[in-house]
Length: 194
View (cartoon, rainbow, N blue to C red):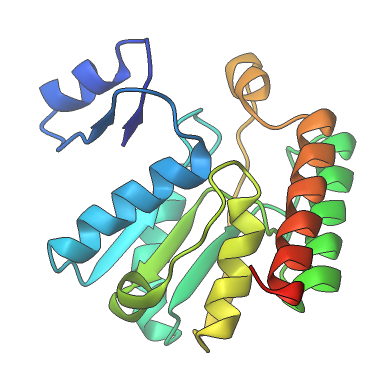
């Protein structure tokens, strides 16, 4: 999924044989993920996965998740960097745990790494999982929607690879404040009806 990128990533992906879906403008992490998963659902995929493009995930962890999802009978399998947080900075750990706590308080979903970009989706999840937010707050909203649909949500440990590039691309503390604001607004709007 190319969400309005200006670098050469989509060109390189096409050259390597990947099917690339491109947005003309940047729609946000939630919008791009929704487009990619919608493509998988419309093309009758039995499984789909997401992985951050900043290099922080090890492709071997993705393969491990693909093998685990059916064994664990999961619908949404999240690669958690916080089960074994070696390699993560203290500030990233605190930030991710904080957003996980907010996700639990607002939506009642308890996972160790609510903001992970490495996720595996079953056919059932592809067919019914939808969300309304388009920024990074979709990570928490996705978990809420999965809970509403009674999907089996599980986690497995993954490693985190942080480079200067991945750190520059990732979320920061101000993003965290914005995410919390958006999550609270979404919860209030739905509580009182739209």
